[in-house]
Image 1 (cartoon, helix red, strand yellow):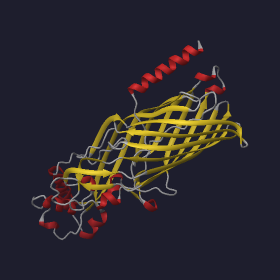
Image 2 (image 1 turned 90 degrees about the vertical axis):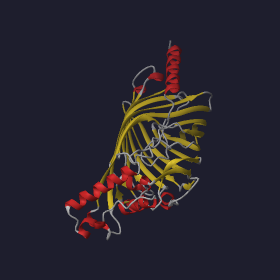
Image 3 (image 1 turned 90 degrees about the horizontal axis):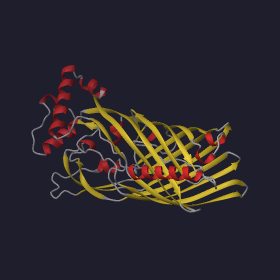
Image 4 (image 1 turned 180 degrees about the vertical axis):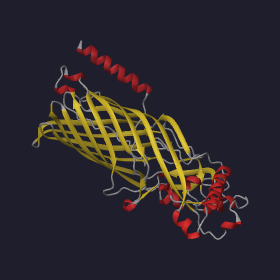
Length: 413
């Protein structure tokens, strides 16, 4: 009977795998899409989990913990530069003569991220040392950009309410003329597929530890995720924005004494170059509002991640907790204009300079393990409540400060 229930559970998980094989990733500067931590034992090396989550963000962080709007990760919005790009395309200057004395017209861009979704994770042991696993989520995302004329500019030129409204009307008309959609986005979809294999070994009572679990894994990030809409600056990618990639990772967990554990996850990943239609700046305008739509080749940089954690189980009748720190560093991407007729010439410096980023998160995980109080142990779930909070300790820069909350179940067998 027990074997039959195990087989039914495995069959159900594999069916879900075929339907919803999508993934969480590290190299996304907008969302904390980190894989699950699973504490293996010699008797339990396969796990399946499902969580409901929501994420919220209203600002981003730069070097030295400077806070700004999420769209300003890619730089400030200068209406003068966008108007100059419009003129380079052979159009009349959209700015009225009243604004000829302005050297720049800066708008502050604030943004918001609001998402809800469901995620899956599964790792199946095929032999004593070999496993295959994946992570997955399906999400609804709403994001927007709000514009407000810079207060210092208003004071410097003594702008009246009518002039402020006139400038905002010019901005809207200019963006519309260049083919941009209103800066709101509501999308539903899956992320990339992150499929991996793992070789690992568990030692019992070794080197003065109660248990040691070491593993190395290799995986692929298959580019099936929802991509940015290049004509909507508020649109965000769910994963790697259409880039296929590979990664190599290692994990280790040490049980110091009964129910006291410490672990580490490290990873290096690389997505491969591709050429695709994208917005291209031609007058140093803000890259999200590049005036030209043309072929752009992007070669993503390397991404490194490290994630140590401490875990205490069965504090009282199955109740436990885990504290985890995750740091991610993504190095510069390389952007190359691939238009057949690159006139006007592209100004890609801002894209190249602002493509690197670093993110840091503390994750607090409270869980209740029913296997501590229920028989049979193999099918007793772990209920998990998790909070991913952005921090700036070492390397956070040019990333959204997104809070993530999730509640779910984990089965191990």
